[in-house]
Length: 119
Image 1 (cartoon, rainbow, N blue to C red):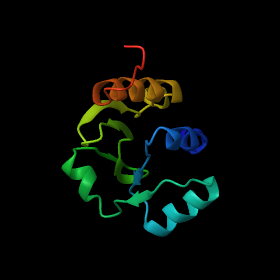
Image 2 (image 1 turned 120 degrees about the vertical axis):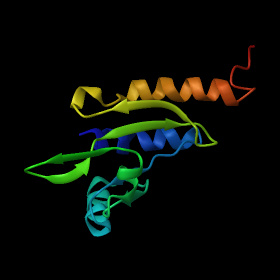
Image 3 (image 1 turned 30 degrees about the vertical axis):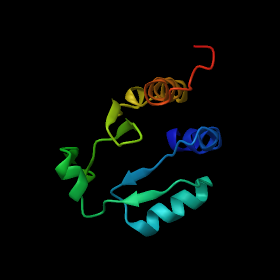
């Protein structure tokens, strides 16, 4: 559900020079099929060997799914510093489009001197 909303949001982000990326533990061919099915233009990256999720301590282990990743959403500044982190372990922990829009507004205020033309 969230990826479908982000796919719709991508056009609005492009106008503001913002980008999305998705990283999953699925193999690249699964990511490619999922991306195509959604009609997403942003990259779907694969961490099928689970290297990154181990480095970031995002590993979740369960009997039914094995080793997978806790779903996080990161809002990053242009220099890739973290502005905000959302832990989406439960669906309600995932950011809404409006929360992401508020993050983008706050980040643009920090890094764009011309953000408010009336200031």
